[in-house]
Length: 249
Image 1 (tube, rainbow, N blue to C red):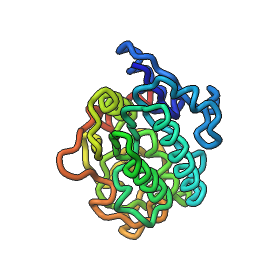
Image 2: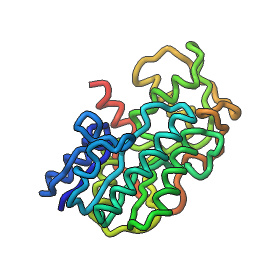
Image 3: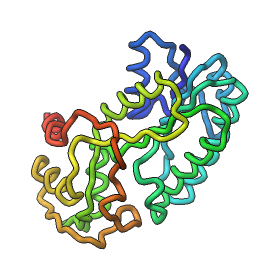
């Protein structure tokens, strides 16, 4: 099959494209750097011509609330219109666990707007909501740090390796559309502050972690359901400790 991966040169897009190509599919890694721009529409119709499946793994270049919303709404509308014209049979999108539970977080609101566009379109679809990636844990900690102390919420957190995200997204791509949401999480559920402590210990970071129930996560206070999946999610295989070992190498 011809499969177009939007955001195909990014962290997840690159991994997904490789997995699909190794299974014998024709894969187009679509991104501005390869001449395909979902914001301007440049190269979009040509890339989607003859495509049976589109995987949207694109990310906003800005995490600022309004910029992220504008990106996902504009990109989503342009992409879905081009898919309808090309008669694409399956739209697969990567989203985030918690998009419908954290309206205080502008980026999550933007991802929910993207999901709503997908639901409103007439293209069969699968939305894969993944928990946050191991690769983003450092950035999350830094956003909660004053340089000496990282004040982290003790809410439950279940991050996942990007390799496991790519594997789940590739599987969803090659499966029948579910016209709904599939959730993915890592194999371990611990408090956010405990993940930060383990990260600091592994990386010999001198900062201290303080648990704070009012600590903000990109503008939102958390509870144990905010960032964890619901009933019976798919679970990744890589543990955080094993990922940290690989990180240190």
